[in-house]
Image (tube, chains in turn yellow, cyan):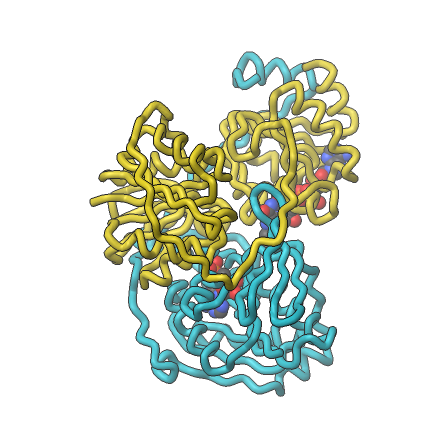
Length: 308
Length: 249
Ligand SMILES: Cc1cc2nc3c(=O)[nH]c(=O)nc-3n(C[C@H](O)[C@H](O)[C@H](O)COP(=O)(O)OP(=O)(O)OC[C@H]3O[C@@H](n4cnc5c(N)ncnc54)[C@H](O)[C@@H]3O)c2cc1C
Ligand SMILES: Nc1ncnc2c1ncn2[C@@H]1O[C@H](COP(=O)(O)O)[C@@H](O)[C@H]1O
């Protein structure tokens, strides 16, 4: 039994979620091969070779894979993946984009967003915004799986796998990358941060998020948001935490002016310690918070920033 | 241009989910059901393309038991022109849904297929991508902006790091994200009109698709409960607790 894991990277570095996915693969058990498909992606392949538990890195270097377009990448994984028992990728927007194509082309199901491995063919995954946990058994010969990063530890990076270069490129030329607008921030990435402070509709506007940023700077935290704050245009979409945004599980999550709708809780309730700051003592966020402070955030935030 | 939208009947996003006491599944009896919110956004986008003169016809398809005709009617009330129900048992697997939809796509030859990025019951986030692959089409998932020009769709996508824009050849599959549009409410006269719009019913056999079981649901359990903690009375107390009790700062 061998497992093919598809690395997520930007051609120079591996994305952290790849390391969590390797851990899930290790729990399934078997030889682990890590595919790095990209363009001028030698640095990413070198990083992949250092991931503990990986026995071989497959590197495919071609312009067709520069932006991980789903159509091209799925075709490649289909060709390379037929002899594996499992194909895994992180449940990030990249993994969610191409993996179902791989599954469909192999005529197998995709088991999305697993949070635990029960056996080589059985997995747990949250459904209904995390309000129920399903244990699902795959009846397919090849199991196509996306992995929720926060549910698995990151693999160590002290390995030394061989890199073999594979020549298998094809540009289907039916889709084309035009541009991207990536958020630039010196703060840690939301899904990897140890501390997160998130703001909701209660923040009132985008400028007020500066109060959260100042506290974040003191705590080395990432800044997140509720859907309402994103929809209102306070902050960009990549900050949304929740069922249909990012799933996070930091050591400390501070929710400021967020009511705690189930769709928001779905994205953060596995955090170790939750703090809620809200002026409405009835807000559902208090039912999951370890420490609640019923107060006006416009009084609390400046004080918190000053006293930390 | 003909547009196909796929709409799924799911639990209303405000309704409480209950797990059956025998842990075989969730209990949806007497639960409020609705059109999946992302599908509603898909219908709205199609209707806007029709209002803009880009689209000429909108077909709403749902796969499931007879009850999902309600959601097709909801789509018709929002502005879809006709509906197709593909009769199956409750919650068919995504791959089977994609195979059935692929047959409709083959027969109807739409230039654009708009679907939700995710059904809020299964949280699968896969059917649109599967349909695109089976139909040999490109895809643009998690769309927050769509424009159609010269046989292509230019789509801005909500990705983890920010926004990405791609151009895809038509026909193609687009899946919706939350910021694509804000769906309208159906006006009463349109709800009445929707009752008279055509709604075809087909079976998997009619479409020549044999449904296969790829997964087995072993059990469904409640998630680990978080117990509510304590209320603190001041910022000082909060900082003290985080430092000395929780030891997270
Ligand atoms: C299909 C679908 C998907 C969704 N996905 C997500 C998702 O991924 N993530 C997500 O977050 N939501 C999601 N939602 C939305 C969710 O249902 C809620 O609408 C949203 O989370 C509410 O955001 P909020 O708590 O910021 O706003 P509100 O519910 O309006 O809460 C604002 C809170 O701020 C408090 N407040 C106001 N002023 C102050 C003040 N001065 N000081 C202190 N407190 C104050 C209020 O008491 C209130 O509790 C989704 C919804 C749907 C239908
Ligand atoms: N039974 C179904 N009937 C119609 N459309 C569906 C069905 N299941 C999934 N879809 C479509 O696929 C999207 C994504 O669903 P999923 O992959 O299950 O998360 C939904 O928003 C619908 O557009």
